[in-house]
Amino acid sequence: MALLFTAIRVVLGLFFVITGVVKLTDQISAEVYRQMKSQFVQFADVFPLKEFGYKPEPGQYLQVVGWTEVVAGLLLAFGPQLLQELSNFVLTIIMIGAIYTLLVLKEPIAMCAPATVCLGLLLLLNIRRSREYAKSKFE
Image (cartoon, rainbow, N blue to C red; front, side, top):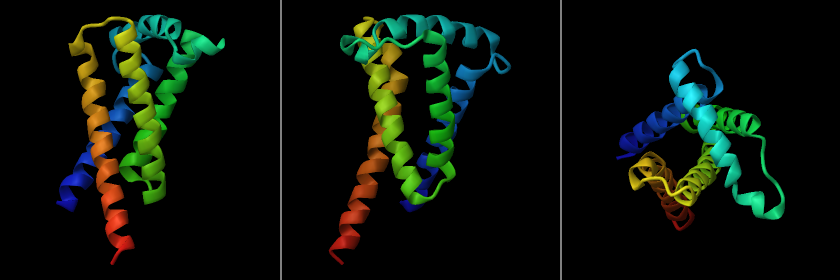
């Protein structure tokens, strides 16, 4: 079972690395990069902290999310346990933000599916880690 969770963690981490790189450069897919740039204009308009007077510049928002996904994805896949847990938390926040954004924009539910699946897997990894920690605490 541990091997299965390790595989999920590594594959999920690499998935985030790829999605982050796609946000950072047009070298992988120019069309997807252009689409991301235009979507982040909309995403910046409904940014959750907008209510507090902060609205990110769409290009910077795209870059920050992209770099965060690359770094956190690498740490989730290959980092030491503490950094895996930290990156899991950061990626969980990003996925919650992605789902929130898509719902506020009234996108079809199918558009939320990738973020929802990623969030579910991140939570699964987190719950498993918490159970391991609790189990070791009482042994």
